View 1 (cartoon, rainbow over the protein chains, first blue to last red):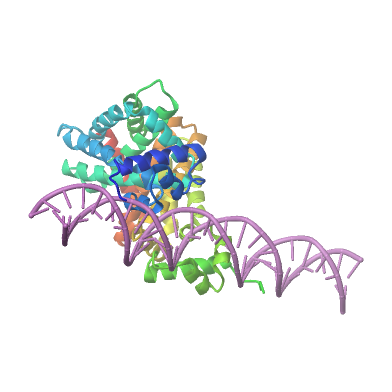
View 2 (cartoon, each protein chain N blue to C red):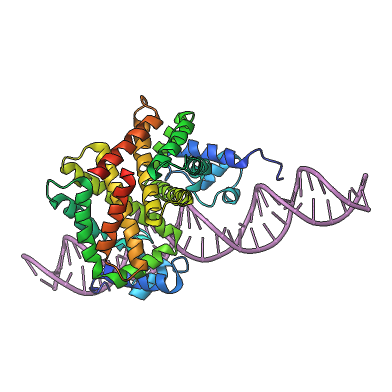
Length: 186
Length: 186
DNA sequence: ACCCGTGATGGCACTTGGTGTCATCACCGT
DNA sequence: ACGGTGATGACACCAAGTGCCATCACGGGT
């Protein structure tokens, strides 16, 4: 056996999304996913470390985009301004993936266990953004605070974008960022 | 059997903390904890829903304190000011529990699985704080943004407080809050 | 003093997530 | 034709978590 299988990770991911969306995360076993992808449970675990992680495959792209946006922002930009520039790039990327993002968001919102993973992914992303901010000369409590505040902005903007098709993610992010500034200066 | 057992939750919690601290979270089974607490695995699950939750028992007190602090802040206080007042009360409470908080923090920081739970607890706390802020008349994107920013402030202040015994949690929180304000107005 | 309802526990079987190990097969270079 | 490499299937195994039922202590009522 072991005939070459084109893009095992991709096929697993498709199967997992389909089953999680159809019958729910809890009602789906890894053997179900594996069977649908045409392989075994053991092979699933050779591609993903656990049951949740398949939903977060490809999120390195988001991290690269976010960190890259912060790093490449003009040196004169303040921490929050740099994050705003990064959020523009992130919003642009999600615009082409609205359908996918909506399905994924629905699956995650339906399962507390998945929300945990989502939250810690956001926290890790905040740490990466904080590193990028330190690379811009931002000091130490400030870098992580700005990064985490940026994640909050992203989070609320994203949720509104999923619920409301009319406005672009970039717009919603800019609005949330302005709101954050208003809060802090009050 | 089933003689009355004084404070089963408390005994389980003590056993779990001891074992998690000694040999680590992954190397501890629920049967180990149950045995040390003088009961069975099945009974453990009658008191806690899973292996992690025992570390978060009693965190309703933190939520009550935080939400109460925000709710009872003077009506004139801005969202961040209200959170600052709440953080004062929270810091005061932790001052009497520094030893316990340090052990707990060490266990959690050593295990990614526990950090996930910690993060989502913080997110739920942010939601409760946001509700309290809405009760003060704060609008909707602002309430959750202020609450999440407040969690970031609490998080960094807490981490510094654990690492550095010299300063009070209240001081560190005030400093982080000032830092957040500086970031947002830059 | 006896009996009964209630609540907490032990014990057991079972499903599922996750891992270690080994044999097998396709592919590739020599 | 041969051997090495890498991916897979198959199997055994451990631990988390759940359902189910029997059992015991306790308190109240008769």
